[in-house]
Structures are given as C-alpha cells and as structure tokens.
Amino acid sequence: MPYLLKQIFYFNILFFLSCVNKNDKTYFSNTHKFYIIENLNENDIVTKIEDKYDTSSMVFVKGGRFIFGNNNGLDREKPEHEVVVQSFLMDKNLVSVEDFRVFINLSNYTTEAEKFGNAIVYNDSIDVWELVDGANWEYPLGKNNTIASDNHPVTQVSWNDALAYCEFCDKTLPSEVQWEYAASEMGKKKNQLYYWGNDLLHGDNHMCNIWTSGYPDTIGYQDGFKYTSPIGYFEANSLGIFDMAGNVWEWCYNWHLPYEGNLEVFPLDLQGRAQRGGSFLCNSNYCHGYRLSARSATSPESSLFHVGFRCVKNIK
Image (tube, rainbow, N blue to C red):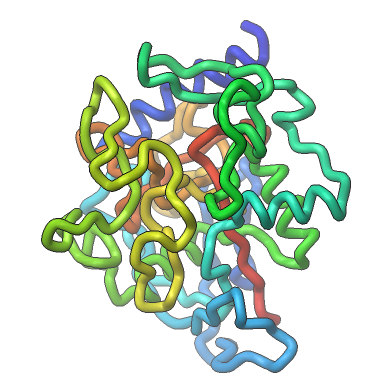
C-alpha cells in the first residue's frame, strides 16, 4: 500500500475507534512501553515567574499535585495516578493562521503538506477521508476553496511543522501532563467531563465548537460553525486559556503510549504523537474527544484539516 494511502487508512481507523466515546524527566520515545512521568519534588516547583517571561500572550500555570488520567474514561486514559507538575507557561490561544504566516515569512519554512502536495480532509457529503491536492495551512480544504481566516487556528500542520514553529519562538509543544493539568484548571476540575461542568450546554449556549447536529449525515452548524471557529470565540477556562475543548485537536510533544501501569498494547493505528482537546468533528455519539482526559494520536508527518496546536514555555 503506498505510503500516503496508508496514512488515510490508519487515520480512518484512528478516527472512528480512538474517538469513540516538560517535567524534569519525561520519556517521550516510542521505543518505551509506557508514557512515564517521573514526579517532581514539590520543593523544586517554581512558585513565581521572572520578568524575562512574557505573559502578554501566555498564562503562568503554577505547578502542583495533580491526578493524571481517568479511571472512568477509555482504557487508554487509565490508570489514574498522582504526579507533581512543574510550573510552566502556556499560550492563551491556539496558534492562528496569521501567527503561522509570520513564521513562514520570517523563516522560509516549507510545511510537509506543501512538500507532499496534498493533505487530509474529511468530505462529509460522501462520508470519506480524502487526500486533497493543494490542501495546506493557507487552503485547508484545498486550493479550490477559500483561504483560511487569519483569526482561526492554523490547521494542516504536521507535528513536525508545529514543533518547528514552537522552536522558532523559543517554546515547545506541551506534554499531555501539562495539557491536562492546564485544561482541568490545575486539576481542580478533574471530576468533571469538561472544564465548565458535566453538561455540554450552559442554558442554550454552546461552550465549544464540535459536531453539534446532523451526525452522521452532515457536519452541524448549531454552534455557529461547520469547520473551525475564530480563536477565543468560546469562553476560556478559569486560567484564561481558550479553546481547550473542541475547535481543533492539539498536538502534544509526547508519543501516544499507555500510561505507566496500563498493560494495553496500542495497535499500529494508535501509535503516533499524542493529541488533546477534540475538534469541530467530535460528537459524543462516536468521538467524545473534548473531555478533559480524552486522548488521540496521529503520525507526526500527517497534516489534517482539524488538527492545530499551541505552545508552552518550560520554566527552568
């Protein structure tokens, strides 16, 4: 099977199966059996930030004790275990199309979708994932469709592209521990499905951009958007971080491995770089990826129209 066709094949399996329903020493190699986090000594937690760190676009997330994982979630979210997280800074917002354009112009970087000449798009009219020629970060649906809006999250960027952007900004991608710690408001909301509670709606208000209606025939518009939504359109969590549920899946730094103590062996289609947060394609009937503990993964060279990212800054 040709390489790019394999990407689509494995992604189809991943999407419909996996979506149902730096700390001091973290091991990220996919040669390891588990995603292992070595606990930090609480005495080593940075309790305040220095002036050299810019907090105009980043949130200082103070470290502490935290129950990571979810014994009530899917098998790959188990087991729960307590970790001690070092403080870090996290972008308030997803990286936007405009942000990424500045990076491209300054660095002359070429994304992997541009090198391949195509990227992956879901065509809901015929219920199929397609490699679309000309699809890239500027034209996430392909050259025959409209250009991406500057204030929307950039998509069609691979894990490698996302990391290149982060490193250009002297940052990195968050680990899953960092992402879940920040999304759950430093662990305070760990007993909830979402950072705003257990109900998808607050009154009649949608709290995130997901596939709210029309499943499985057409992507729904009830939350106001078929595809991505403007960054910051929906309410932030209490830390001031936006879009930690829905809109786009977010790349994480580590490989998608079972948590330490989980004897499950992930099949090939679940082996890749981890992703968090769910996307506009998630629906609780088959993909509850916007839950706080939900996980997914894709191969690091894959570019998809519902995957984006944000950066973190590790404090030394």
